[in-house]
Amino acid sequence: MRKAVSRFLSKLKGEPYILQDCIQLKDLCGVFGERFRQLTRGWLRGFAFHRRDGAVLIGKHVKIKCAGNISCGKNLLIEDGACINALCRQGVIFGRNVSIGRNTVIDCTGVLRQLGESLSVGNCVGFSPGCFIGVRGSVRIGDNTIFGPMVSLHAENHVYEDLAVPIRLQGVVRKGIEIGSDCWIGAKATILDGVRIGDGAVIAAGAVVNRDVPGRAVAGGVPAKVMKYRGSRKEKEL
Image (cartoon, rainbow, N blue to C red; front, side):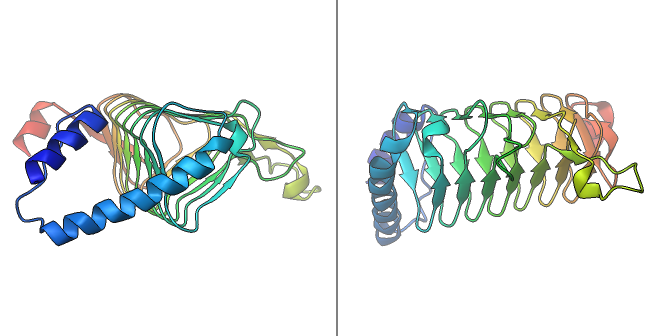
């Protein structure tokens, strides 16, 4: 039974997927029952998407606004309590095998007079529970990047220099955020507007990233600084 399920999941995801022997049959049936219900919701609600190239799985209490702006590859999973506001200028694109964790918020527009730009998420990207993706400027995320719980991205900054004018009336700056492929963004990290994170970078838990991070760098702290590089001699010794 487990081998048959493993073969099915491997074919579905396009990569090896092997179930561990310790998983009991009743637990496996429970998981598949929940996945079937998610698939049914996704089939019904996915008709509102601009484009979908395969299965969409949607959990309970999921809110999706402006679904007509969403395009997705196969196997998009939106877990319980997630909220997606897809109202933006250039739409929202999810690649294949993207998972959006419980209670994650993707917010593309705050006020109607200032629509957000766009969100592009690559293949095999995972958002853990409680993430916040604030799409005001454009946000681009490469393939195989993973986000820990409660990571937040803020693609906008307020102008605040003029002491005679309330901050809310001074306007905003939107440079956008770019995160490369094969990155790991640790739990509760905050990525601010204008940041570019290179391929293969690691951001430590709790870091506040307000400047660019090179590829393969390991960065942490408040504000975040490069501590070392993956694959370096020091890294191997550790």
